[in-house]
Length: 253
Image (cartoon, rainbow, N blue to C red; front, top):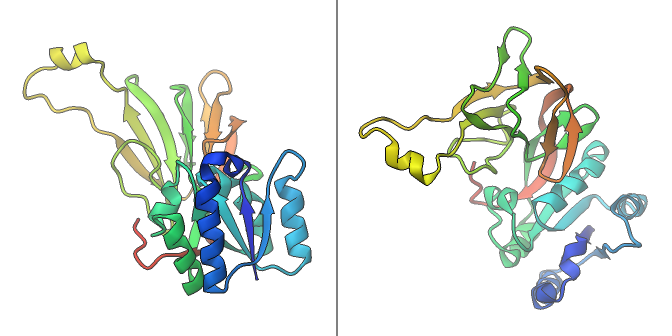
């Protein structure tokens, strides 16, 4: 049986009709199950513990990327399968798994095609999307060598999927994450003064299986899955194919 967990933001009135359509579709497909709608009195950890005690093996996140990330942290060590019904904005993970809409998600859940995704671990926390920092004092320690931002770098990240504004390939099933160093974006007057024919600076991308994120002068803040933070130093591992997840037929990397 499936357990559907609706993030607290889906309680907003603007999602009312969409959620009703989802529930009717799930019923028509014969995959309606236990439903939990989070609120200030009903927390995620308690809901998942209750579902596990009832023997539920598939947890479906109804919400966005951050919803999925929060749920993954609580189910990853329990061998449960994840499903996703995207609602609202910021659903890059669902899109990369071939789940383009909440309506399409119902059909995908019913078909139950299982994939296995890499999961990152930073100290004692898991992450699914990536790590980001805008601090130039960051150091990526890969044992044999270090990587540090150049003076003109404005963004640094370690990505399982590409949730950034930059173009690079990230495959969440290859056991590797992409360390990305991106130059600062130029303002309009810099573009005007940019020498004709000169090539714009490109991002630098390095494949990573594990590293220590450190700092040059003082501890810096790392954003984890765009919803929580952690201070350096931090040990990062890439756990290949750690998460079972229901994916669409046209999954893209």
